[in-house]
Image 1 (cartoon, rainbow over the protein chains, first blue to last red):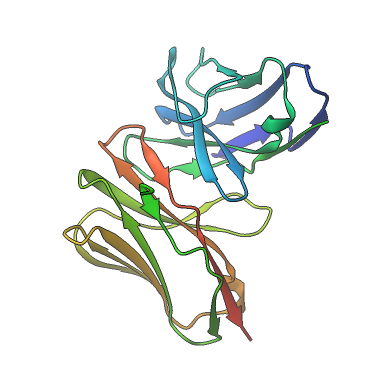
Image 2: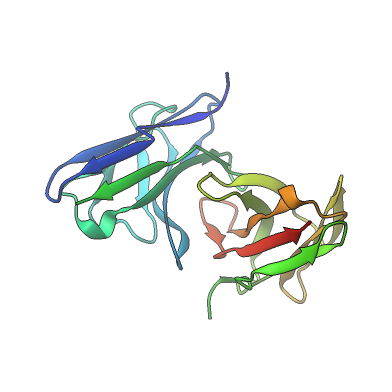
Length: 111
Length: 111
């Protein structure tokens, strides 16, 4: 089925560990995005990608790394997790200025 | 001033009534406007999008855009308890990656 899938859905890890959140879309959308959603802040853009091998920072990029070697995949890595990165993470995809489609999210807890 | 502002609510309406959700934005160059519905613990789901001034109707939903006054609204007719959710307004500025989200309005439809 066409869509956007995120994995894992839930993750618990410890401070200082590296963790990677996966995102895969089957629409061949050019744009892909990573957001975090926290109470009181709404959705905040971490990184986005306009195409394979093209990525750029969003509003809150510190502590995160992304890559996009293939159009359909856009993994997000926390290099050394901190408690402040406990959040719900959403991946989304779209064409330029078109509606975004969201994955089901990853609920990440950092102890 | 926040770039996209919404009243956090909760907005309570009786079943069968019209729910009116409002959103204001600060960037006059904004081109595309989106309404998402988000149930608790779920991902945002696209409800409506609008690009031109005026009204756009889709079933029980009507999006209204007034670029001169910089607001966009969502009307939900014949509100149902299943419409109870948080509604996110999003604005695309510049036609590329920049989607700015409001923090959402929580709607409660009372049976």
